[in-house]
Length: 364
Image (spheres, rainbow, N blue to C red):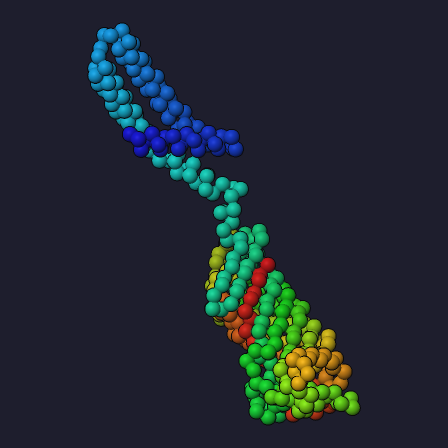
């Protein structure tokens, strides 16, 4: 009995609450009225009989024990009546309860309905975030803006050995990570809605950092960029940092396309996990380069020198890129087809070669 009263109370409470916010369906109004009628009618009859018992007790017609016994019998009888009438409306009760709960949890103003609107993925494959706005149809997911961050290991190679990674003959150290890039890109589909080919074009910034081998530094002497031994003290850190403003242009090929139909049209489902091959080109303009040296001497523990690079570097670079990706994990190799350093640089290796990983990707 307590369970049924609690359920009826909850239903009526939902009904009164939503009646203030928006009209209930005719079915819910009908059920609410039936529940009200059952409870009010039987409660009124029960109260009349209980009042009569109280009156008899006040007139000393019955004892206290008789009053308790009669009140218990009356309550039990009306409990049975209400149970029977509620059971008769059990089907309506279930339908109305489900409808009310659905409206309460998935009301049109509730953000739960838009649980697919934004997405964040964080794991061993980096960070991937989607901010999808009001996208509703499959075609809306076939074009997007994205902002990505990549960690890069930059190396120098020669024209004769363009893909020789970590050459011992290079003037710079071989390090796994020494550079990074960021870019804002626009992506759209090539061909029809079912095409597995996409193009991307963007604008970004790339920072390359080269460190000479131990106890050596970059130096500018007589309009020439050279690498030489450091003699001013105890060298703590050194690097040549170059910043480029660059334009990447890529083609993305989906190797495991999955499809979805919407209004009789077949679309590539761009929300599914995808295995991709990326091929592209890029062009960059050097915004600036700086030689940074930090060292100590017998007189001071910290001396920092910064010198702008004026000689030995080309201002424009062109290159090509090839990569493979799955979900938020993208591994790529990109090769500068034009040399980073020109004839005014006395270096054995002058062409840039990078291995990179996209660690963060935000889609709009």
